Length: 198
Image 1 (cartoon, rainbow, N blue to C red):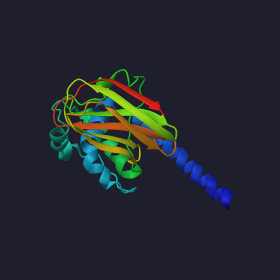
Image 2: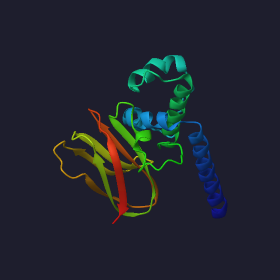
Image 3: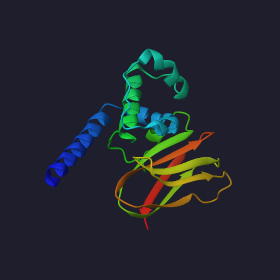
Image 4: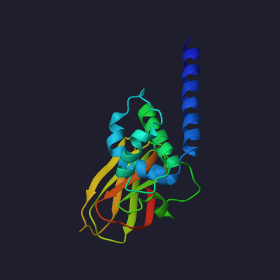
């Protein structure tokens, strides 16, 4: 009986993993960045493991355009927002497409058009302590969060514009996909990012 239950659980987890991979192929980095910076701050609290929504574009077009800070959202991208929202609500997790860009070398792909936010994948990190550092071009105040795919917070810090050094340490307790989210009220340009295990 235990073997049957174990097999069933393994099948469910494998299907969930394949579903997430398939869904991530249908969304762009641009849409995922906008959603995970601007939309997730409200919608991540609504995850229930059971809710899902159909693509009722006409009801949501103006809402998405208003909150996404981008007037050039296409019809396809609106569909991507629904995919991201459904995934967040049903799997209680964030979805990010896989791409071949090294986020530590090309940070612009992971920034809002306004440069008032970043959502940067840091990779599947092993358990341990890490040191994160970056170089901003402007001295502005911002909020920095390091979190797992399932919203587990590893670091949540408000950073003052007078700060001299931009080094932050955090601890991961198990292997998990980890993301860096930065929100600022004024444009912030990051030219370099370093992450190392200490």
